[in-house]
Image 1 (cartoon, rainbow, N blue to C red):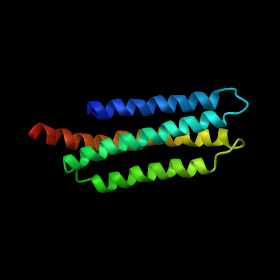
Image 2 (image 1 turned 45 degrees about the horizontal axis):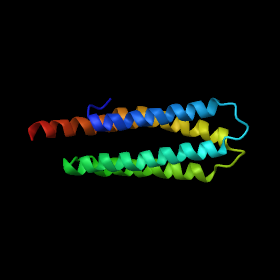
Image 3 (image 1 turned 180 degrees about the horizontal axis):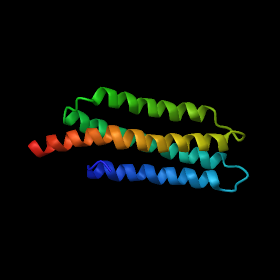
Image 4 (image 1 turned 120 degrees about the vertical axis):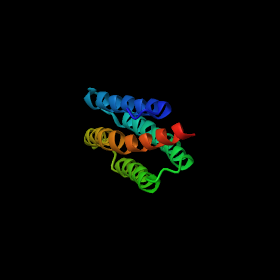
Length: 129
């Protein structure tokens, strides 16, 4: 992962949520709406807490990429919110598929690139302290 213990533990939570989304997508339920709402709540709550932690670290170590990173976090939250707006009993399958793709892309694009660069920078600064 990125090499910061607490951040990596939090990222594992996102993998768990992605697994939960995948399992819900594949579940043979007549009505998934309530379950979809629960997993979206979990995703949003996770993101709010995790992003706050990362942003606190970036500010503490005066990470130069803070502004861009912060904006990308805001875009994530906006995407989750806007996706929820389209949710109803008729769209839950499509929305589950779309949010699963979004989370997988987030893992590969954001965590493995942006978070890794941020963590590398912070680890260097920590070693100088």
